[in-house]
Image (cartoon, helix red, strand yellow):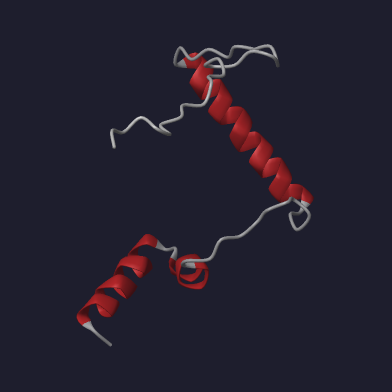
Length: 86
């Protein structure tokens, strides 16, 4: 085991999150909600609600935007074909 591995393990132990980092390091997972329990969904909803309330109390605003509104209008594609001299 190298010095990096030893230091990395001690840092994980100090943070208390060693199992999730070592198992899921580099893995991309897709969460479609089917594997979550009702209690975990409620906890997620409560956290989202608290985050929204904190955002709004700190002066944040929520705006509803029409579906047909775009940030920037569509542009014609640019073509550089034939623009260079021979």
